Image (cartoon, rainbow, N blue to C red; front, side, top):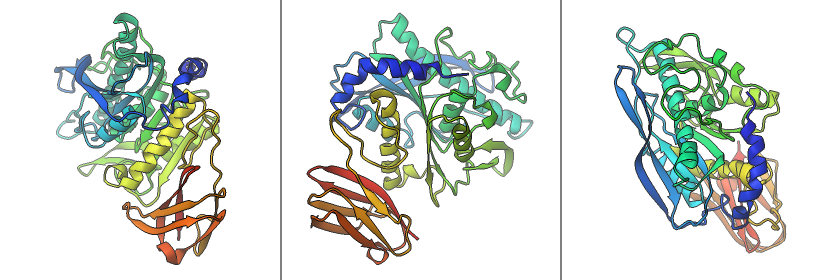
Length: 412
């Protein structure tokens, strides 16, 4: 299915573009956020046949006066058996994006895998994914319903709604974007079971409203089959450790408690399939990292936030598409700062070329520690040797009166 909302977003962005002139969606222009907890957005049956209310927490920028705000629907991780809407994998993300001006809906979804007969199986694991997928669709429909029927109490944009998810929530995001035809539903799913009916939309509530998203942020998620991705569908940015032993970065088996629960296609094959259709997308391969490193590694979290922010801002503020870690222009007449780093990666030295200014250079390792610092160099180039920092992946932060630049460096 073509993602018609992407075209709509381009058209309506002119209405919200004035917000971008004040740096909204590009930096944290708000000092704080407010949160409304446990808003009921739907209900459906669990794997044991119990009717469950579904809740979300809504994060908003504090003291915000705008009448229409871009929205992110955010889903937590936990292998579809645990996790929560206020878990450590999603809360900081929700707070930081609210400070950028987004409204963020962190959702609860149905958890649990049915025993078959004593342990989960490929079928019951797949059905758990479909329950979460259905709930995610109900959540975005709920938000649109509040706009249409309740007078838009949360002051949302109907057309600028994005999906984001971590691990199991990443599964929800990519399935919400690309599993949108009835014949794509996995045949292994028993849709006659309570809580699994309703086709691709499900029965978790708020029918007759659109469940489409403009674009998505996938953090260590996967899809059942990249064949479900069709030409003209929604853009996606993915973050995934290439040493992830929980959700495959490539194509691999999903396992739980030593049981093999089926095959999934991770962020790399998703990226390749999107490229084959020329669908805008980015893949940030977290080299040498395992599952969701942003939870414990501040540098990975910073990279995720900056790149996800840049990606989503494209579809609100009409910025250029960028798949690298870099500061984006925060004023419509402001030009980006030119930076060249070569060779990168390197086994010996790198040359860094900058506009002329008085620069402060700080280089951080993967644990966020400053391993190199150089002040007040005014030339337009800097030579950095491997001996200065050692072997590994680093982030250089360059600061002057004309701006701030961040870039990844690798010495091998």
